[in-house]
Image 1 (cartoon, helix red, strand yellow):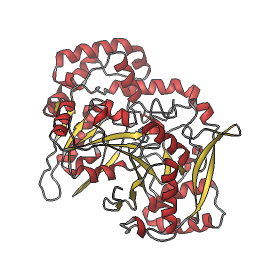
Image 2 (image 1 turned 45 degrees about the horizontal axis):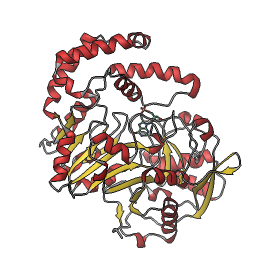
Image 3 (image 1 turned 30 degrees about the vertical axis):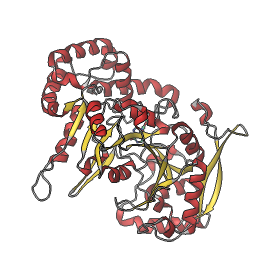
Length: 468
Ligand code: IMP
């Protein structure tokens, strides 16, 4: 098979690591960018020359103007997708409309409004046991479940109204009681009519993604495979049941797009200098109590500098609580969900999890994003091991049961911080010595080189180290 690079990118922790920035760079020279997994639960910022918007289904590499493919592993909500296509292609500031080269796999599972109703129903059932997963309520679990039951229509059915109607009738018959219990008033006839109209508009974009991507790759052009979420949320290897449905590993990327395992030449794991997660579930290095987040005020832009100055002084004097430190990091790194707007939970970088991530995924390189957000902290902590019931867990392992994971205690290494502004630094060796030491510790824990270092929110604020 082909010799061109096939580059996979996945999140190492709870999603929202800033994969998009790395994808943007890689997409400049790629033949296509393929969104492989997840659904409209993901959210990432797409930056075009004259427009910035939050996308959920389009690959974040859409900005680069290469072919954007939505592979079979993605659950496709046609209303959401058409909205993103309209936003993307709408005339920009100069009145010129943008063209979008998009291909959506005809075998991808179709997301229906009914799935969101079912999600409400099943989250209520789960609440009794685990406070719910904290789902984004985009129907991910129910889509996977109904596909596993062979009751879920595929994207290709959008262009075959009669067949689609049969699928909708079967689905409705199977789930009518749960749909009724969650307030559904949409009948199969109503949904069939709505989907026929959407199918008409989506038809030009529907096709065989696997074959097209394989062809591009065989023709010698590089292919970028973009994951969704991060491994904490992986249904097998994450903190189940506080997980999503799409797979979040490199293996998941290949499963989602249909390229052979042997194709993947580069495996980039993206890790953020501040660990975050949204929704419920274990988070050993968390700073503060997530139950208090709903009441935490958002800091408006005008007050940001004063807030940061005062908080830093308090933190560095050793007078801040964990809750305050977590709040500071949330504000400093703008950790608020792109899909739901929820406050993200924040904590120190979790090296013990990263070691586990590396064991499962064998990344060839890492990207460390948002390093600039640590500036000014006198001391930084990194988790180097987990302890459970007074014993260190073997490196690269985590408990399988969430009830055990919730009892895990992090073991920290403390390092000195730096005060210099690194937002304009373009070379690793121009970083402050403390920042280099921090990076080197993370590399040592993961046993993997950090090749990409995020130094600010803009695309160009990225140090890319040459390969050894
Ligand atoms: P679901 O995928 O919407 O069912 O949500 C399951 C869990 O994954 C919840 O804790 C969500 O908050 C989390 N989640 C889903 N998508 C994302 C994402 O893109 N970033 C971070 N967390 C996510």
